[in-house]
Amino acid sequence: MSETADHPSVYLRIQEIVRQIPAGRVCTYGQVAYLAGGCTARMVGYAMASLPEGSDVPWQRVINARGRISPHGYGYGSLRQRQLLEEEGVLFSRDGVIDMGIFSWP
Image (cartoon, rainbow, N blue to C red; front, side, top):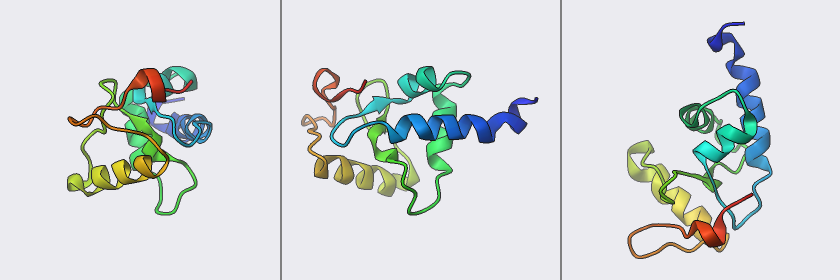
């Protein structure tokens, strides 16, 4: 099966992993890719970006390897992501970094 034709099943695996991240915890794109298998961190980003409005997948809990929110959606999505994480109790340093020693999952 070609890589393009396989995307739906990869995206479903990614979504299932992200659904497992508990409120108040975060996981990196790379960690999700590793757990889902057969994909890259970039693919995880594409899978999160393709979610429809109102999806039950907690996309906000996926961040980059530096413990930061990756810029997207002309900045509006990034602000919304931070707001959702803060509502779940995730704390950010003054320079916008999440302490992965405290908030990382798994």
